[in-house]
Each structure stands twice: as structure tokens, then as C-alpha cells.
Image 1 (cartoon, helix red, strand yellow):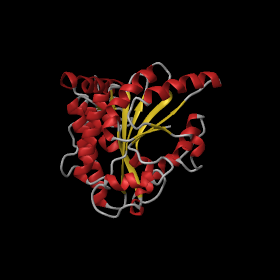
Image 2: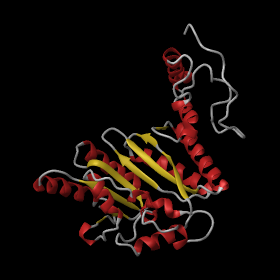
Image 3: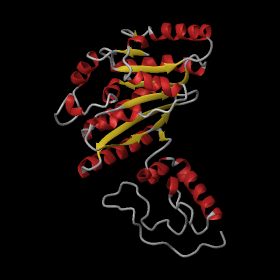
Image 4: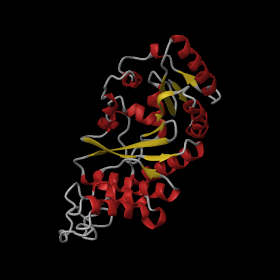
Length: 304
């Protein structure tokens, strides 16, 4: 595990991680997580640190980090290495050399970490042991629930910075604390932003959904699409894949009408509606006052 001091280190870090991940020096899931989510992941409520409105101030987060076993930082790299000891050492020495190109980089010795530190949850998951400590950050607010912003992008520092910047701006607009983590694979990079809200508070639910819808739209304008989403956003996300005047959507609808002409099987799933439902108010795209009730269905479809 490594920590890095500044938000602006993100671009350089992704550029360092890309060749290491592609060459399998970094194995399994290479995760670069913001310290705010790691602090929240200890399971304490937000009020332990701050009771004010709006985003929790950076100085509060950095104070909490400085009092933790990790020390003050902004980004935390969680990774793993497999194989015989000699192979692991060879790879980890390369990782150590590359990460120390970032000013202020610190390697954290796992032996110094307490048993409840999030690092050990990652260690268990990497070894194939199921673990739910990850979800401790839902305790950040009362009655915590979450939805996620999950765009996929090339493994490039500039792309990571664009996505992080738009997420930060929207979270500031809606007053929601930002929990971002970059997950780097062999061919792609995911940004996973968990929006945590009080599920018993209608205003908090509305803010979280509005923030997520805005980020999906912002990302689409920049050329990034979601790889997963909440059921309520399936229609909006499907429409963001609009190349060729919505060619993919029309193709999916044609398949749906051929294979399931009466739209019996999961109508609307993944934003694909059968002909009996299309244009009858079932789609949920974020329009003012819309519901999921729809306006009935059309007649049976034949001859498709």
C-alpha cells in the first residue's frame, strides 16, 4: 500500500499505473482510492468529524488522516502481488521504484496496520475470501444507502482528471461528500463514485439522484459511458450510447421485438423496451415529474 499527498498527483499516478498494470506487474485489481472514502470506510458517522452543511472541508479530512495509521495523504493505492516470494519481490521492487517518482510518496508497511484497517479487507478479497467491510462507509450518514457513478475510460491521466473534476464539481453543487476510487484493468479504467445518502430523507434522495443524473450527462458529453447503473437510470444511460443517431438502441429494440414480441421478459431492462411499451411514458430519463407507472401497453405485436 502506498499513499500520495496531493490531489494533483492523480494524473501522474494513472500514467505510472497503466504500464505496470498492462505488463501484469500490478495484478488483480489496481485501486487508487481517495482518502475521504477510506476515512468513511472506518464506519464512523460524518458527525464524528464535522457537523456542518455542504462538503466536509479538506482540512478536516486531512486532520483525520494524519491521526490514522496511514498519515496525512490524498490518494491511497491498494494492490496485490502473487506467486513465489522471489517473483513477488521482483515485482514489488519495480512498483516501489515507479511510485517513488511521485513527490511525497510513502510505502505503508502492513505490519504497522491494525486489524480493522481497510487494507486487510482488500487483502482478504484478493485471497478469495468474501468481505463486507467495504460497505462500512454507508454509516457516514444516518440510514445510509448508496448509488454509484461508474464511467469507463481509457487508462490515461488526462481522462482520470477530467472525470474526477466533473464529479467534484457536481458533488459541490449538490452538497454530497465525494467518495471516488479509480479501478485500473488491463484495457480500461473505471471511476467508481459512491453517493451515500439518508434513504429516509426525501430531499437527500432527490439530491443524490439529481447529482448522479448530472454526472452521467456530463460524462457522456465528454465521451465516457457507464458500464453499470441503478435501475432508475437505465433509460438515461442507454441513450448516452447514441452514436449513429441511436443505432445501438434501434438494433436492441429490433432484437427485442423479434425474440420477445409481446415484451413479456423484463420490459425496459437495460433501457430496451418492447414495442408495446415504447412511447407510452414508461421510460425514466430524469424529466420533471415523471414516474415509473407508464401509460398502459399497446396491442399484441405480430409479423415482426
